[in-house]
Image: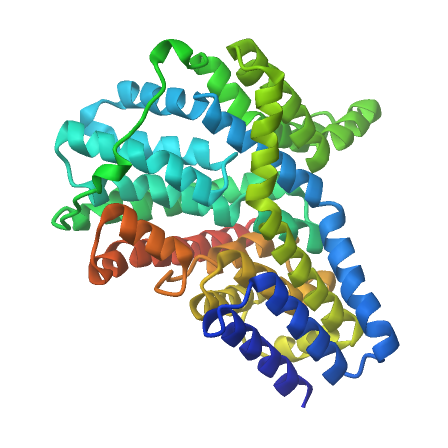
Length: 437
């Protein structure tokens, strides 16, 4: 009966979000309260459990996600993203134009949220398509594969960062593993797969022709790279340092402090405020306005994460998480594969990668707590599954279709299959890593 209740509640969540067009946060809240009541949590404790789930989930995430959004917005507004893109185009040249766009998408995708990165980078894709007279889908898909993978796999993006917190994983180690899995996934789904798409005709709308900043107003190349990638550099450095210098206790303490995700993002944001903002002639008032705008962009993402946290807490308090973990142990599947399948199914049903990842986390959290699987790899497995086959119920599908002015058929053939390849290759990478870690 318990499993029927959970299945029914997840089905209700799917129906509310897809058919009912209900906001995902409100859907999570409704389903959490209903699930708690049906699972026997006393009514006088139910609201408290939901609130606790929200607080515990957001407590260590709110600052990280907010500052990540601020950094990404500043990278875009200052022209650093444009500088990185134009420089890489010069380095790679016309022959390797796809690789230039892919690397650009990967670098820009680390600090930028997916939708922001998409809107920012699509004009660049179109300008290259016009300049070199190449099919827009063929040259653009590698960049969008990079943006999608960084969004689904790598902290400090919202869903991976939330999973790191829920599974008590190491953010730096997850990032290192994530990079190892992400790069082959992007290459296969991007430059390699897009070779089959050269005949797709895409006539980008005139509305999306690029508007670029003058060259003299752009920050320097080294400044743009360092400011954009500083969170990655700090996370990797503070993760590796204790292994390189195991006997230096003070250094390890400093690394632990500087490796905290909140501290990393604060340092990166302070540096970027000066390097991309003030040093580039941007008034402090305008920089703060950019940051305020960025917070508005991610406020709903935070609420969705909070709602998913409340659902997870209900499952935990009711004891269902332990029951689910025990039942899943009976399945003849590896926990990483099982989590990937669950995330992929929810993704296909709901459309949102973030919701799919966070919902799956609540279902499999007890498996991770029992210590039978590496929590860092579990983050990546769920992240890969959450990208599976984006179709008509996903906003990203329509974003791609409308910007590239494609038919639904061609959008499925290009975008949907690219996302599927990313998900499957990601799972393969995770399972391969699991053999060695």
